[in-house]
Length: 386
Image (cartoon, rainbow, N blue to C red; front, side, top):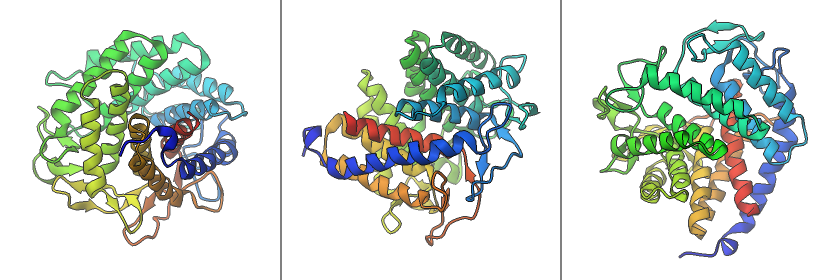
């Protein structure tokens, strides 16, 4: 049944959206903008559940994600100094973490000094995302120029003759992975939307076509994770492994590209979502699990926080298109699953790994998760508001 979006199951969604906005603006943003903020202009890498920051190291992709998060939170109405924080972190990374060859390093210390100079495709993807979102929010075209310069280096040094890109100096070259390509896709979409530069739109379409040809398993409708050098499914279990969270995340990205006119987007979203919902949700815990196989069997029944946010984003993007009560219900269910992770003594923090027996892995709250939460909650709030 197809409904007018205004008549869909919006009452529970309105409540969820209100709670999400309050949590981000009243709890998460005040905490992560101050606690563990370094004099050099970096956000906290991770914290204990008592809000004690760990300053052992700072990964570039986490700083880039924080830039995205605070631009997103600022756009939702947070009155804190998000512009100043974002500008300071961006400029710190450009000044201290950019190698002479144009790549960005992997890790820095609390003083923003390099402690691991290796370059990784996954890190570069998030730097591109940060440059796009910050460039838009701060009105700085120079950040779009920086993104083009980084893309020049990626294409010159890492473009693979058989499709996609090499992963750089950290990842195991034995297998190729879809994941960094997915985040390049996300970054290119953000840069295209923010800068209106055709190069980024073309790059986004190129990744989408690659995914539809090489990463997608036609038989099951799953998005595969691991591949050989020529982008065939990897041998053994690796080549049959799918992550429901990534299926949802690709579905969200395909919905965005479909809204911009890409003809394959809706079908790809439909099949990926059908697979992930069909075998990737544990009905007892109410969460999306980490890994399944293409035959639907569970492969890793633990459940990290981030697949819950991608489940929500997929449902919201599909609700925008269809207005269906099914998608509204899926969004509400995803919110309930995600909320479990946020039930900690210090509001604005979270747990990351839920075990099969319903207990939690005892560990620090990773700052990288704020990117997932802020993006999902922004999608939810925007959909309800519109």
